[in-house]
Length: 430
Image (tube, rainbow, N blue to C red; front, side, top):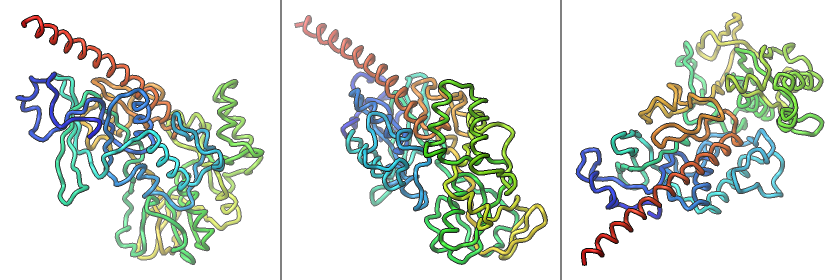
């Protein structure tokens, strides 16, 4: 294990006899990073550049498991590639402006290889506790890569939570769904509309995933109805060939946020028309302000809205209850359907394993808003919880890696001084 040793270092002799440690533990001379998605990899790369040892723990059998295992085939990055690249490693020049998921995975694999990052795969964190007396984190895991599960315990000074906002799928409860009888799946398990050809499909959720799944179903000659319970901002992905996001970023350098929101909504109306006419009511708060305050991402349209206007994607209100082969809506309408796809989002899983309540809320996201949510007390850090996608995660990763490297170098310097002084005392006895 290049980043750690199997025995506690001699500089911590007082810990060896404490019940605080189990007989099977690994001392990590640097941080433990939980999660090998883009956030965890970006922190690892930053630490590598500064010579700081670390380990990355990943419950899946690969990097970026959300991208590799829980995304649909047609997925592309919603933003131009320059806003999605990780620190110190640009996308290949021959990649399109909006790389496919397969190109993005290839990019992440190249990133991992370039910085020589070697995560511990198939290792799930069960708990992470901070011992204030010793100033150390105790991270317990279950490793399932071998023939039998093995319990492992890591002891470290720094802990980086990089599991992100989308660690677990959200599956709402609906009356009668158990009696529906048809195929029910979450969007994370949806790959393609090919197996739904000719079917009447209810898509629950109208965010980017719900819109794109509905569009994909249309392209495979299925008949989707999309549930829209609340208001939603739909913006064109591009304005006159320029990324809407890039345009907004440029305008925010010179204009207040409320004015940028107003301009975006005027442009959206000119390009898309009145979305409310088709059942997509806009929120009262502008798209950027809503993103900043509530974390609700506007839909960047890539063709679904045209299908909504043509009636190929039917917009329906909230669900009252399911029955055999049917769904009753809150307006009294009943639809006959054969499948249900839940595009109902994701949540953090941090509260299930991190035994700490100062940096993270009960929902598993940092209490302090961006850009101040990346650092807690006792060597605890958070990356990938900014609600600002890959660019926000990259900014946090740079801050975290720099902060840990600074502390690690100071402590290493002090230890070397202490060891040198001890060596001089030993020499003086001879």
